[in-house]
Image (cartoon, rainbow, N blue to C red; front, side, top):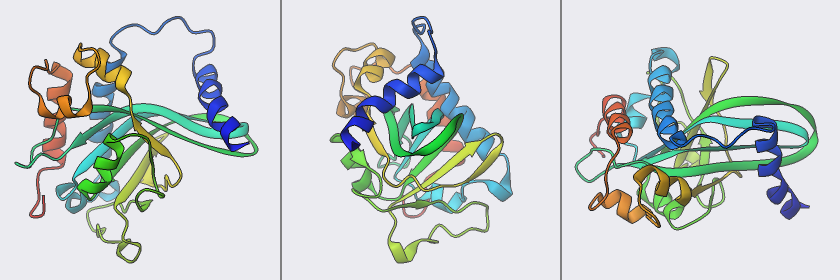
Length: 234
């Protein structure tokens, strides 16, 4: 049953999100990168509900997945595409790598909703696991609902040794949320389209050599530099 769910869920979500939709125009990857920057900006506009600056300052990676479609109709789950950026040795942010987020469940439920997710990685080890292939939050690394507000301590979950903190933003509400059991993996097809280079891999994107960096990527890197500058542990 579990295998059946993972096979059927993406098709179910996409059909509900875009019923009989025509081919999506080229440039959706650029729009996704721009949307990621917009999500970060809106979240950080409200001090009492923002991601703690101390957590962002010491983050080794940040994934932003805008507009994740959450559905429920006997089969429930969510599916979306976003970007992952890594902290460079000099404290700056890397070029964005496209990723896919998916999770599923079984139960009597109905409804559909679009939600933005932000995932903050405290360690480099957890990010490297994603770059090697499909990665399950909570199984491959401890994940917890992230604390919010300037007064919140980034070490809220110190007893559980969480490596990853996750957040959601829906209908104007923003809060920490658990994404345990969700899978996160590199979206190679979107990477190839965005950077205009076939068969491009994460290592090439991070290296940046012989890769044309779109303006949208540079803009997103500046946005993260503003809200998540390197801290003392960066």
